[in-house]
Length: 245
Image (cartoon, rainbow, N blue to C red; front, side, top):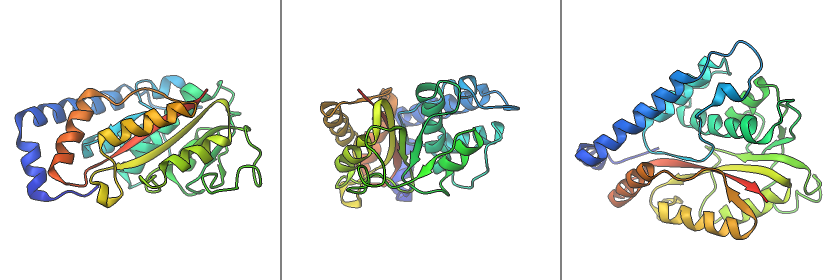
């Protein structure tokens, strides 16, 4: 995530924004602190409070996610942002998708070395590496409606030009009730990023295609994202998780 230093300082110095950042940091730290240390197979209790849909608008949230991964004895990474996205998607897999037997069919479109694949593998799953968001992959290399979860996360985020097709192609692989998680950059449109309003448009269009959002975009997060967007800075990431009806 990049930001103009002067602009970032102005944003951070505003009392309302500073208080909202403090609340976001505290919530992230509290969630990480509540996660139990993992000494066995990962289950729902290990990821309680981790949101499958969220906005990342503060580096402290990402650092807390990476620390949570260490507490859960997941493979280490130096990428805080990737850790934040992977933890949210892993929470969706463990808490929403899987029935506790670790038999869910998971496809990672970002490849076998992604943080998510490494973490999901440690958690007892066996993600397949296949870019189902490319045209003709589903129906040729993979049967439609056979996958429980599709993910493609930072740094392989969707762009405004690709997100609708990414969701259409990726969801074609899903069974009914299956889940798709992806990330998008937050920031100026001319940098291939999304505003909060853009995200709400994506969510509405996805709903029309039978994909319901799991969770929501929080009010405080939205306020922070809009203020940063007004500054013209490149500033954050969105994790969106949908379930196919």
